[in-house]
Length: 423
Image (cartoon, rainbow, N blue to C red):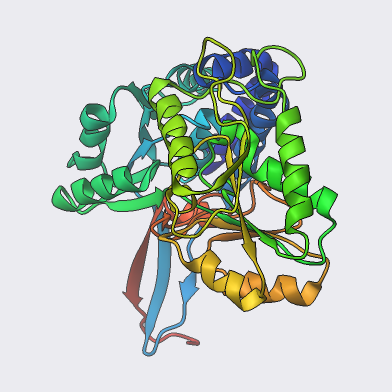
């Protein structure tokens, strides 16, 4: 299949995504519990956008002609890496499908993709649509299974040339170890986070509260880059707490298929119990529970939107990735202080900064050791913007032109020149 033909397949697939928007959205919500409105109006349109983005790149991937000392013609070839193993998480199944499958196919690779055991349905349906769009048989193979069996098989298989994994840091270490012990395949890892969201002293508090609320509670708080350490300047701290508490109390929790619902259930009983355990850690550790803190309703894995104040850096709720609707709010006084505290984490995935001062924004942008910094916004995931982490939040970048590099090998070809007219 030529690069142009690959491009046409991906464009046709994007059209089919739009045609089947509501079916894909329903599967995503049934699997995951996120609000249907979020699936149908935000995530499925983004799925189509990602595939159109990489469809446009498919016939524009090429090498270079390189000058060299001596009488040689030197060129580089950008070749498909081969068979790509991809392991996607349960929190954003279709978006992670797009981040991995779209660039891999654009570059001409074949794929073995393992879905999360909690959310297998939407990726299977999307793969069916890809074949309907004209993808050759065997180019994309979706495997449903558990991490210790199916995931481990992908990471350790001797005929898989590359692995891309999104998930927890602990599991990422296992994937990296299995890849190294097998055929030393290349690995891209997008792992956990404990992202700081910094509200500066000049902030419009009402706007800061709303953005910090979105940064943490979006997708039931099950987002690797969630702004889960909310640092608020002491000048506006008390006002922020009162308004953050009120906003959380107003958050609409319930059946994700009902209109107006902002928060559905957590993914499963394990995650549900883990979040409640961390809420208990916060209470026993001395943080102030401002609102929430308990199960919502009497059935299902629903948790009340929860806000803690008077949180200290050494508390477990400030250090560990909770992955749930639990906002921890910390107080700071000086800019240098908050930079040091924000960077004092094993993670480095993302950060949010809320300020009206461009100098403050520029200082924080360069000082924070994270892969993404959002200034007066959060969770902006355009197809062209690279995403990935520092430190134990992973390695490599996905999305944008950087995402292509994960699925290409560079080969140098050198040919002697006889009596060249020029060099």
